[in-house]
Length: 276
Image 1 (cartoon, rainbow, N blue to C red):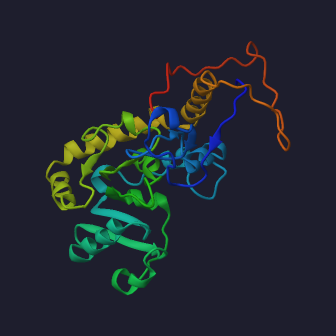
Image 2: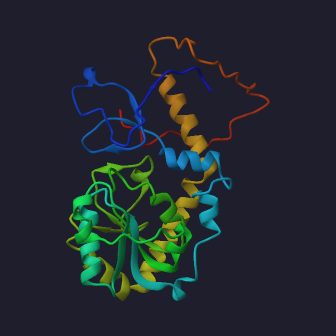
Image 3: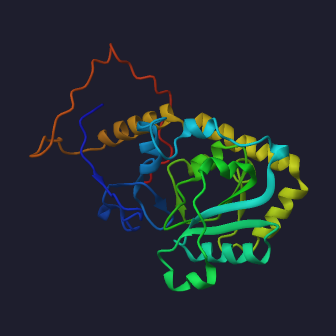
């Protein structure tokens, strides 16, 4: 790895608003948006899951692969969602679930942002294992404070993902294709029921989309892919630096292995998702 210095935004929201190029700051963030120019890297959750694969209490991509639920034909045909109240559209989803419980099973596991509305959208339900999500054929992915960071895990399962249109994106979204890797629905949820009905009436097509999404996750979002993405990201960024990185107070220099002993096996030609 080359010596490199950079700023990292540890919050969820991207910070660098669009402005003239000469005024941009190169800030690394977990999430990007159509209104910002942050340099997007894999989310902290996905990164941590890679570093702690098979050793975490919570999710990692390898564990999801071993817990994808029953076969497609044996899955529950109700659309499923669980989460907290971090966006108004999530409130609308729960309202839809109450109106059409035979179509959508959506409920909150925690109230934080809209505590005053708990009597309208509660009561909260108990957390269930993420692996139990895959007992259901249809997985609803809807934004939280920013992009819902669970999408890699939902794609890796054996269910079809219905993804909300969003201004937010993670590092891999540019390669995702609607109707190939997921079923899209509008940001305001106005066509969600319609898309669910389509999936029910086109079961083979929905199964194919689920399989394609799973293959995408296996080919792009596993541990080696995340390591390689970071490597290429830092390598590309370092080539653009105009000042020499310094070891400052409180820093520790990480010694690098010799290239001939530990050759890089990353084959990605370029990082396609950097927003500069």
